[in-house]
Length: 224
Length: 343
Image (cartoon, rainbow over the protein chains, first blue to last red):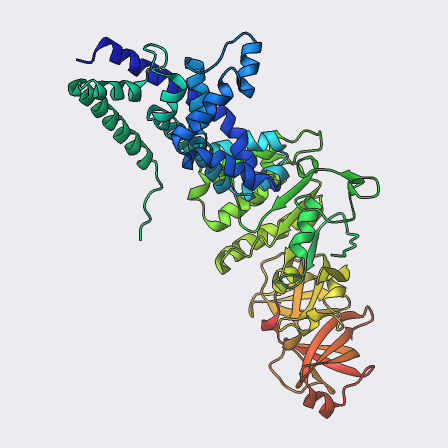
């Protein structure tokens, strides 16, 4: 029987992952669109920065985020000035950190999907009288539906799996920043292997379901 | 690229040339999909004027564009595709009557289908209808038959002829296939290396010896003619043009109907005297206007028929030219096999 505090951790994790995913879909859409259609010379640099969280050790990410969001950091100064206090060790801080951490996992599938649409359908739409925004919503988005699905699933799953960044930015505050992965770590440290199994097993099943959903979305195999 | 075009406001103008001659680029510039230096005026509207810094974006130009492959929107039904342009036609410019367009392209039975279930020919006809329903002032077609097989081409060509005859807007038709140009074009523009080499009515331009078109295997003139009579016994039709006639294989058109003849240069033989008994049905009096060598062994000859001087091209060997003493100005007889005529 999962304990009350574990259930709290699960709910917190789901909240974090959902919020982060929604936020990311909103941020990643214009970003991925720009990356897929722009001819600007900044494109490569922006693309590289967006992909940073893919290669940077989470501890490094967590460290720098701690500095920036902390009271002395560039972002921290603004939030304290606005009366919001510092973001580290708060749920809001976790959301910010998760957004950065999972950014490439949402941007990349969207960018691939937008690029797969190609120029032709958009040119056709333009000749039929559709302006840029119209073209985006009436053609690019519907034709990228599977990209959105992949981006949402990956973003969600990746956020659920966060550990290093979350520990650094969030600490381990039950009810506020103690997410699943941190709770699992706690159980192992306290030699509570039963509880650890429940959490870990649950995460494995969750991951498998996610991957199953993703794979069932792949293109139909060719007849020969 | 240097192109200056001044085109008729009805019928089909063909942009003809080899790959790389700039035909597609020209079309894309007209549509605003690409940008070149210059000015574009269509039907009194200015779409581009570099001097006055005017550039109307594609979605604000009343242009219809049919691409080489139909490019129907896969996430919409055929009807959805057709409606796409119609819904966005902001002006009161008569969006072509939907009923009329659907009939014109014969797609009534396809409306509820999905694009993936259509054949190549059906898709292309839907694409044409879609472009027309957006109410364009100008229809641009970029080699619409290039991706179709012979059977589909034969299926679509009559629809294109109907477009030419029934639409009140001009059509610019890009092609590298002289056969399509000969069959469809009212006006021909020849492009080479991004420059206009010639521009004129099809009947005149295709008859010119000084253009690369004369040296094609399939070179030949087009002649506007009218059906005069049918011979049911022999299944032949006589068509009148200028002040001459030709017998062709029976055409299923009523008397008086306008038809377009295509006479290939290689199907025209010449004689200095009226031939005795021969299998050739069509013997026309003609005058040699000009001759031009074409390769080591042959000569292209421009003839003029009758008082109205209808042009015709003939191709003979140099040996024949010398043996018959063919030179500019002399009278000859042009022999045209009726089975060789394409209507």
